[in-house]
Length: 160
Image (cartoon, rainbow, N blue to C red; front, side, top):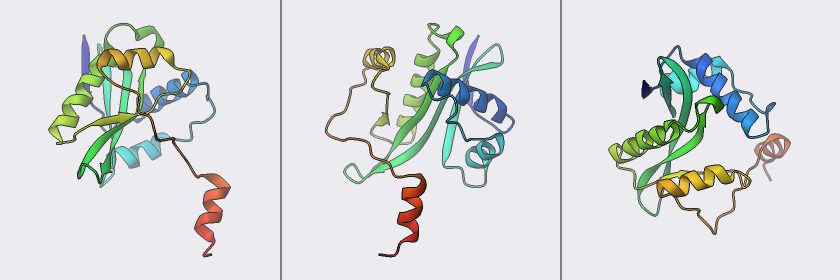
């Protein structure tokens, strides 16, 4: 039986396993730097800013939706941002991702958020088709940007 529940302390190993599965799926198997300890601190510390739902089948975690809140000055309200959605390969096609999205939609509404946002890799056409079936739409006009590593260090350390 499928159950969607809040992640809780003690789930760190399962969450990390699912995050690593997502990294493999996204063709970046060596990119995960998270540890069980870092997940415990960010998800279950004194002031968590990141949250997760786990999808379980017969008590075994098989899917993950990890999210946090952002803020829109235009709406004047927070929005839910889905960072990661993943279902184990052998569990796909059973409605698990849809159930996770439904739970995310419920949380979005419960928090008074006007929208839910996420990103999808440009080659992941299966995910895009799934999101369209849910009623999602591709946003245009904004390109994602990032600063990290040595460039971030230079910027943080350079007063001029």
